[in-house]
Image (tube, rainbow, N blue to C red; front, side):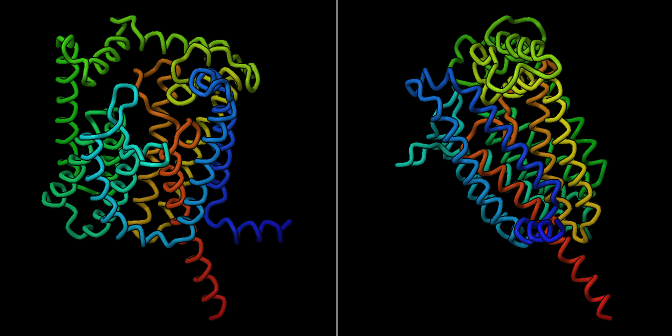
Length: 393
């Protein structure tokens, strides 16, 4: 048994708990996507129920390949890569706004010619923005209290968030909150962050008031009517599509019971508009019960705990910041999705990493896990080298 564990540790390096989380999330995602895409398969693929299952599994395997490759690379190489790919991401975000394809009335993706798939540029931008911030903060620790450092990093954050927000506001908010957490952990002067928090709260409050009172009849080509409907639905003032989605989601959650109806036995998958992505947590609870739903929450809480341990063990600021930033981004996104499914939050369109059906999102989330495991692996190897040196001495 020890030999087998040692062999496993040589092939899959880094925190074994995070490896377990990745594998469990992937398996749950495969089962949930296969169960929830039946209706989509009949309407889009002529009843080929294996199409989306195979597509999702294929992207997962591609993502796992990137994950494995990234976990073998010393995480410090990602410091320089983040500079290049962040600016590439910004260019792609601009192109997406200009000529991107529409999904759910939002310009969010770029089609990849000849492959028949689309590229979600916000996922790429989110990943490399977090890496870039971790790099910048780690290199500016000696002057971290200066307003110049805060101003420079906020300029980059606002550029990316502003480019994402028009077509994917929920993702932009997740990115912004994650970046603010990194700034706090990176020891940016608290008074600057406090002013940023007050300004952000004031702007959001003002936007909500404007949205609730604005006439959106002639704005059918923008996302503003969607934002207004979601706010009104959450406040109980609208009984439209968003309310229908949350009602069906609540039915799925309520009928799941403690142990659920069993894999593949969901009924609400036939009524929820996006049971394989936005509301996949409701399907998980319906089929696996509150036990399955609680298990999903615990997996992401465990991920946060293990990444906090990485932060504690990391001898370098960059490793600590990049691991915690990527972990918080994925966990926060997952918890928002869960909150929407049980009616605690308004409909957002956010998915659960590695669980919801996706394409490029699966690949970039896999890369994020690979980078976290790279930090963990590097820390473990440095500890082992120090222990060997002490033993030799």
